[in-house]
Image (tube, rainbow, N blue to C red):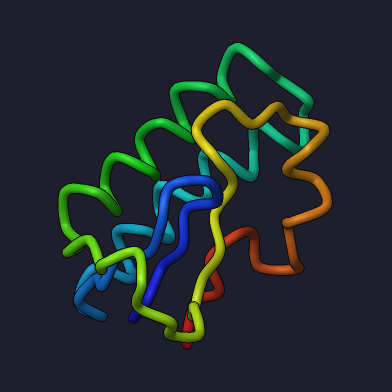
Length: 94
């Protein structure tokens, strides 16, 4: 799957990591739902770090539709509300 981190670029992440990404996404979603900025920052950092660690960074000149779009590392709770769908940032199945 192709994951875009806004302001950072795209990463190719093996689909086998989807369940683990969903668990990390659940922590982000819970922090956003409760508007808990203190819990939000480490939850988002964990999710983005997982994408960076498990994924292969794609060259900047590569144009591929992203399967997932994640907020930038410096995003605030209020900014992420607009990106959340019914299943959080990451749907259970792609």
